[in-house]
Image (cartoon, rainbow, N blue to C red; front, side, top):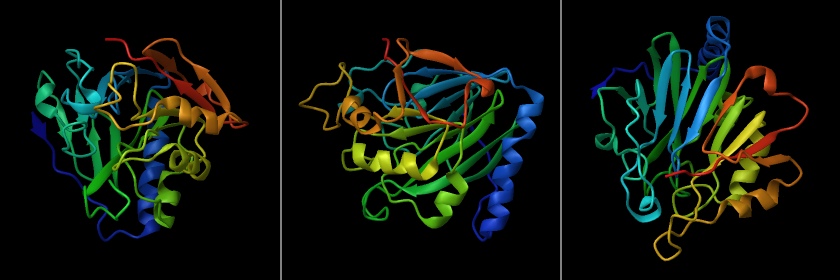
Length: 257
């Protein structure tokens, strides 16, 4: 697999970083607004297909909370990883020769600008599990933010740079290195996306003995005031026109082996 050099945010002011986020939001809409298909592959792993590109986020090794999952042969064009922990950075489990992006910063690939933001992977400012990379990009005219395995509280700069996405994918199951249901609810309120897709929770394929994550229902109980719906499949297509500003949608995807 190929890893590309990144332009980092280090040393940039907030205004400069915000301008980079803004640059990412609009050109892709003009180029291709046909929407993006989102497929849930278990844990924090998702495949995004649109704009002629297949983007895989956080491939895993089957162990612990991911022991019951099977990663199919996807042949993605790009792989984004939030860290190299085995449940979200197992790039050797991915077939083909995709571009692998693993560091914070700005990365251009085939007309799409991928932006990585560093967030703590624990509640101790990263002292236990280091940093987690949250990913933001525009695909098929849809502004996507995947928080990976974030666990740390959002700082003021994070709130500015990460707010207002069309789709927010956030961990909700807790454990020692990701948001629990209560923390995830606060993040949703702060970032105010148009749609939320919960990630990183215990499903029926994970054993309670080997997985300390909460089920998604605990998070859903906290967002009952939002428009919650089960998709009834492992994938669905989202278009910009489907997303409204009046109320945040919550959509739960099924895992299909």
